Image 1 (cartoon, one colour):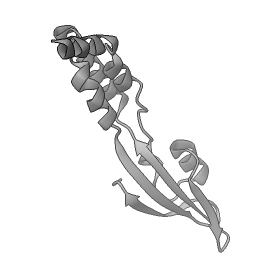
Image 2: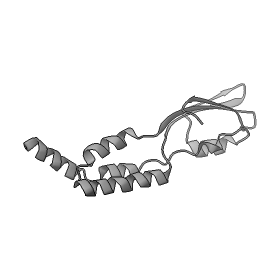
Image 3: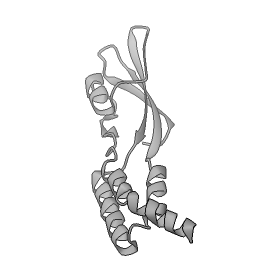
Length: 131
């Protein structure tokens, strides 16, 4: 009985954590900017700083690595679901909801982008994650 009461107390203390995690997730990067001819400034502006940036034969090469989150509408929907589940279960949903949200981080992506001499996208390589 003590373990059960401890679990209930922990769940009530964590009430809303899964909803908060779902609502505060990064909505993801706009990878639609990755197209031949796009300017490097547009790519970096959309994907953030590259983890590796180099120049070979006078041409830039960037490697981007990030967790691409879910669309913000999907995040809000999950948050609303978690709040409803918390209310219905008196907070016990957090025992399942919070670890579930910890696992839903989006798709990991590693992308290499080669630019031409004018810093326009020349080639795109998806090493991890698909376009």
